[in-house]
Amino acid sequence: MAFLTESLPNYINGRWCASTATEYIDVFNPATTEILAKVPLSPTSEVNQAAEAAAEAFVTWRRTPPTERVQYLFKLKNLLEEHFEDLARTITLECGKTLAESKGEMRRAIENVEVACGIPVMMQGTNLEDIAQGIDEIMIRQPLGVCAVISPFNFPGMIPLWFMPYALACGNTYIVKPSEKVPLTMQKIFQLLEKTGLPKGVVNLVNGAKATVDAILDHPKIRAISFVGSTPVAKYIYSRAAANGKRVQCQGGAKNPIIILPDADMEMTRRIAADSAFGCAGQRCLAASIAITVAEARHTFTEAIAETAKTRIVGNGLDPGVEMGPVITAASKARIEGLIQKGTENGATLLVDGRQPKIPGCEQGHFICPTILQNVDPASEIAQTEIFGPVLSLIHVNSIDDAIAIVNSHPYGNMACLFTTSGAAARKFRYEAEAGNIGINIGVAAPMAFFPFSGWKESFFGDLHGQGNHAVEFFTQTKVVVERWPSDWSRQF
Ligand code: NAD
Image (cartoon, rainbow, N blue to C red; front, side, top):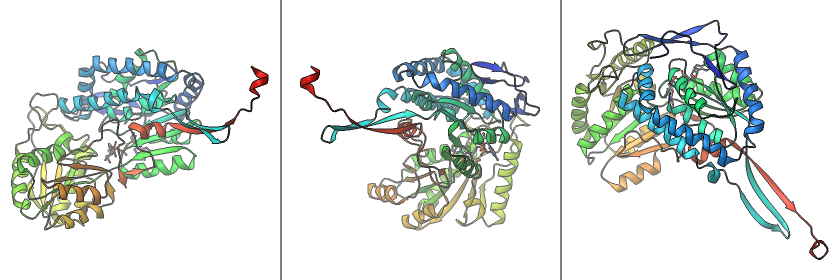
């Protein structure tokens, strides 16, 4: 690993530069607690340099034809494929998920680069001749200027690429502020961006935490902010950036319910539900956190999921055969274990207790094994709070209406799923469930890059989501031109 304990550089105006930060944070491998690098908490002056460089680069970049702009993305796509294994390994090292999960993440990241390559078609405007006699009206899309992303720890490779490829393809210039917990993957992706030959200043990387973010939120030349992270921070960023006149989209936290009807294919449901709840150690914004069993499913599903949870192989994500890695930090582990404890104090019973596991060779790592609480009160803290760990809460009800009522009473609305073999039940659920991403016999209903990632309620603040056409709308402003060209043909020709 090339990073070791060096302090990571920023990438500003086409150059790697050491930060002038006076404070640093250690980056850990969560499976071993080995220190991988030091990340600088970059000062405002470095955000200013990045914003100025990006603003200057914008003048030429926006005039570069879209067909030329996407050539850099085609190159990036090829470089990401070439370095796929190394990028996946880096994600596992700093984030803890299994190598297979890291590869899945990078596949989704690349998919966004591929979709953004379609910008010469996606960015087209509309027009209508003769809105009045001899007068035409056209709507064109123009880029905004400098845009930035502030991203969370759980998808260090994919989440910045939910936004950056579209922003660049639309003619904007860009600043990435990765999570300070997992900055290494973006170091590598920026090394690849450098190789594409993008003009200096078009992409910039500034490491840091809150103070760096605040400098981004306040910089007058940064026109738009994309944020992904927890709901309290999403609300803060949404309000501060909007108060500064910026366009903002903020994807927040989640508490995703899945409903299991008695007619579901229980073998398939068990497998998919376990992957949803325990995959990536439950640290996915689309992880199932609550399973609501309806009528007889209470018995069939409960037995099946308990067995699956107990037998999941937990360990270092780099080791073959491992099905689940650690959670991100010691603080996260302590928080999750505290919530499990509170759940039991509030009346839930522990069906599977994954606390304090011994993982041979990773004794210091931040591990919690799959945990299941049953008889959870829908109003209790464990049922309401985002746990962001491998913990599934079981709630039992007697009808699909009761189950949907629980889904809809929840403040979050990132994802809701139904397991059934009934088309009528599926349609009712799709129609009534108050969440923006819906799964029917799917456990992680993650929209492909050509669909918007549609969180609702406390899971999203803004109007336009990430990915697909929403991304094109977000990263462009419309201009409408009404034209009249009076002519006297006989005289001119
Ligand atoms: P986080 O909110 O702690 O941090 C996200 C980013 O915000 C980081 O870059 C961090 O440096 C910055 N930040 C943190 N506190 C800040 C503050 N007070 N002021 C300004 N900036 C601040 O989130 P996390 O722990 O890195 O990620 C996990 C969260 O992200 C979970 O809640 C998860 O549900 C959510 N998430 C949501 C989605 C989605 O699509 N809705 C996707 C992935 C993760």
